[in-house]
Length: 211
Length: 211
Image (cartoon, rainbow over all chains, first blue to last red; front, side, top):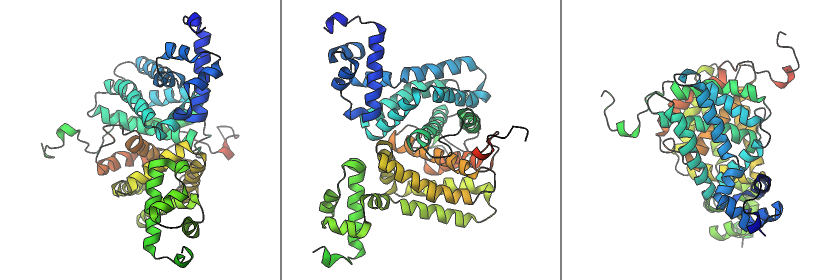
């Protein structure tokens, strides 16, 4: 039967993704099985493998990683070249756009929860951040040490996600997203283009400070 | 036998804490059992209950929460009143002091991992942050909306911990702690005393913007 469905309609794919998000959110990466997800979606497990190859890819898609990546890409495209001084505000605004998509809040929560407790997911998130998100931010910077700057931006964004969705730390957890964007934007900007107080990237660390 | 040890010497208490840290770090809050911790420490489980009352308290002590709280308290005491403009640097420095204590890195990692995956630990960490850490920071601020400011500081500190210890996001993960303190200090300071761009705390949110 799954064979007959191999070129299944998009709704089937969406049904699997919705079932996967539900399982990953409630049970975490480890405990959510492809078999249970297939049962929830009313399909044969082999159809999941056909569409998504493996659990990792299903996880990434169910948790909207391609969508998050696309949102950032659009943000950087729209900001255009030479707009480094406003990049903090643009990234903060993109973050808020994501916070306001109702399906993304549980996805981000599931992502951070799973990454914190599972080494495979930690690697998926690290690679997603490094290869997709941070690489794009790094490429749009002209300041020295762009990779360190991008990682600092990631630390603040992750911290907001953690405080808001995982720990539900008030009054941050229920703060208006637009306000949150305005509050963190100058800090993201400091990381992106500000003076980092003497940071030397590894290649330069052996040089004397007066060189 | 545990009875005879009830007024056990401090080394026994330390042995239990070390065993607990090992189990919590490797297995997380849920899977680490008091029975296994007792076995590792070579004591009867009832002795753990005698010393720590329950698993939550043992967890908090094993993960150095009282010590983190004490470090922050000393920092704020040393900074003294009227030093709000340097509080960001002081808190960043205290954070670095903690990062450099070798036993604290695994403890913080275990704490974040467990908090992300377990609702009980999430509550323990939220209450620890709210009642101990954030309350003290809040009390030392004269700027409006101190609770929101303290929560923002917590979000950046949590984010650094998450990026550095859980995700091991380079080059932040291996950045020199002192450098990291200098880099994040101005951002913490912005949250503590800067202009938050129109934040209204909940009691004021119903008032018109021109009031």
